[in-house]
Image 1 (cartoon, rainbow, N blue to C red):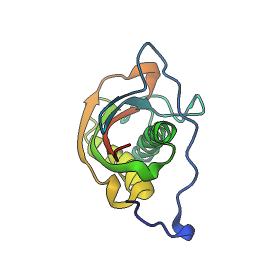
Image 2 (image 1 turned 135 degrees about the vertical axis):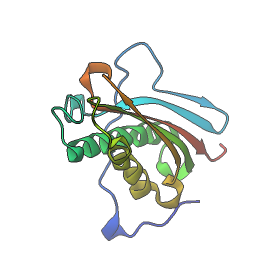
Image 3 (image 1 turned 60 degrees about the vertical axis):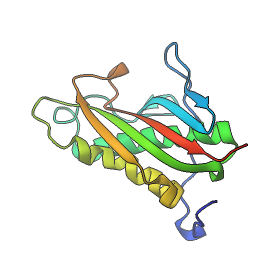
Image 4 (image 1 turned 180 degrees about the horizontal axis):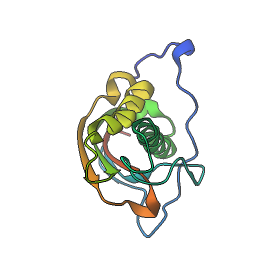
Length: 154
């Protein structure tokens, strides 16, 4: 069941899904669950920002990256399901944030992803979440987000 969205408040269109950057599947579907592989902060093949939080990047830039990662998750789901109405709920999100050792706001960075899921899916976008600070992510992406999603039966 889809949460109605007021056309005035309707989110912007989603980007095209990213192709995998290495040897892995972008998602794996098992029954009604879709495990979405980590999505980096790139839009149409170009990174939104590069670097680490607490170093080259601000908190706001990190949130922008996290949001882009979430939009990439949603784009993959739309491609697999046809539209996002078949998403029953986002169960779990894991965000990885590349940062300096003294950066302490990883959870605030990840709010960029959480807010995007809720913006596009309403209550179905509410989720459990883990956030992990790391020294470096693939291709110098500041953020990577993976998700576990429950979908309606076929």
